[in-house]
Image 1 (tube, one colour):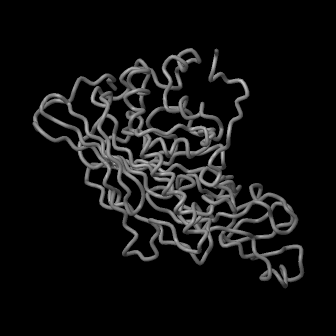
Image 2: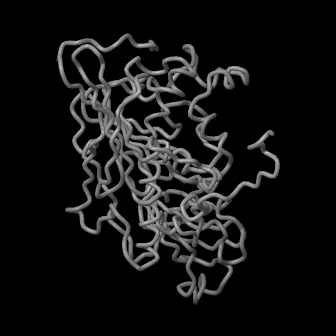
Image 3: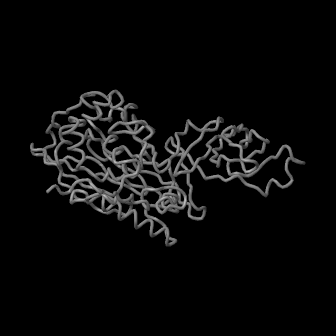
Length: 400
């Protein structure tokens, strides 16, 4: 008798309390307790641009005096979009009836009203706080009374002479489009899945990084005060071992050291920023002597970048994009069959659920700071070689 067929299969549901990020969703409210990168600094000019983050459509601009503004696009007067507004010295003027709003949403002028609006101080355009740091614009979308200090990161505080800060919003690693068109959690939890590397990035698609990364590691997982980390040990067979530490830091940071095995603490951090429930971007910061450093980290397929592949190539040599997007726009998590090698995934999901409960109970999630003294984040991820110091790396499979 045939058993176990797909006849009658009824699929379950996503973990919506963790995957969804819009207003009033459980993890969406957790997300709103942190600062998020939303654009590169040079993108904010006197020409308004539309940005989307955590399911909210917003307008970003810089006044002629240089102040940043992030406002809800629908003008509170009659609903015209401020995307079509004109930016002036102190604010943005709606194209419909000329109301002017400053970066904090105060109405400065109502030109069609007597004396430019006798009661203009009684209305306010919805707005969000923004700051500039490390070449990125950061926004806080949460309750004002819970606003934390914008974090700083030790790897970018004192950049050594000869190195430069690199700002990128097109993603790194396994290739794929800059705008990722599936749920953000499918990518973020992948950071806690070191076992996909020797399978997806080696056996299926050829050695995409180095031969060391094709070795199946022994892995332990640990909770940290700010997230979860994996410690991966690889016996290189030449008297050396590789200890590789990968971290996720709440609410959406990925700390993944160079897959081409630059030795020592990582010089790369990425933020997996949901635009909505089925689209996200990765904002990456790095420091290096080579301004093209991040581009050279991208995996290749038989020496070709992801964008140069046709559909048969993508099917024959899948990468992160194919594996993660093929789970669906939002993965059906109830159908997962987690095993011992998925311990990091399970730990991450449990810690996410814990932050949901903390916020719903009126508390604060992990890794938020309310004083400058506590705002510095120290990064521990990296590649650490142990054993013979002069032993060469195994033969690299991909040459730049």
